[in-house]
Amino acid sequence: KAGVTQTPRYLIKTRGQQVTLSCSPISGHRSVSWYQQTPGQGLQFLFEYFSETQRNKGNFPGRFSGRQFSNSRSEMNVSTLELGDSALYLCASSLSEPTDTQYFGPGTRLTVL
Amino acid sequence: GEDVEQSLFLSVREGDSSVINCTYTDSSSTYLYWYKQEPGAGLQLLTYIFSNMDMKQDQRLTVLLNKKDKHLSLRIADTQTGDSAIYFCAETPSGNTPLVFGKGTRLSVIA
Picture 1: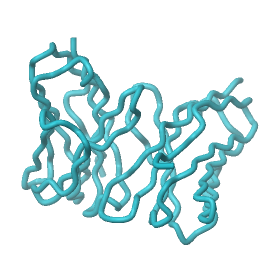
Picture 2: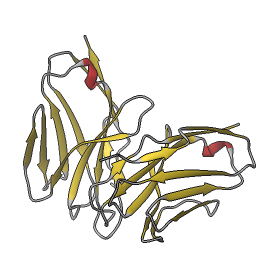
Picture 3: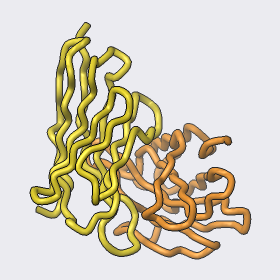
Picture 4: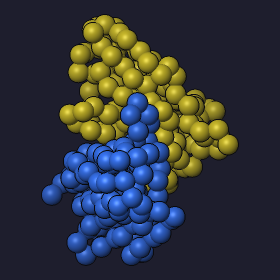
């Protein structure tokens, strides 16, 4: 069974731009969660989607948004990029509950210049 | 405390055992996880333990859980250079919320 895939793997943007990241979960998994990983803050939860609905949300500004499609694929968007948004963005999928075992993708490395 | 806590660094010699410790926050956490992250990669699920268990063994990995002290440990037997990575402890707090991670322990294996 294929694992969680994320595209693109690397992105370089400038301040003020916006970016969209994509995540395809493991086949049959319906819950998708997003995390931001930085050296200073570690792994922080962004949001979780299930059945095309945001079910949980972390403590991030409204510039961070996401959505989920009917095939469970998910995208996250960051608008008006800031230097501090430079991070590794990780997507994880699980069967149906966020408390089910989560399997992570390789991440998208975003660099904001 | 409010955070999942781990020591930041551990250095061991090849062939020795490594023990990585973690203190979690929520005694209601159903599952506790250990993930491994190699440089430039995502998180790889290593093992997990259900909260009603005290110990789980999986090949070279042994997980010990002390619910009274909210303490979790991961023992890696016969540590190899390929085990060099960052190890994250994570819990699933009560309620329908996702994983809460520690800051990670960087394991360095010296040949």
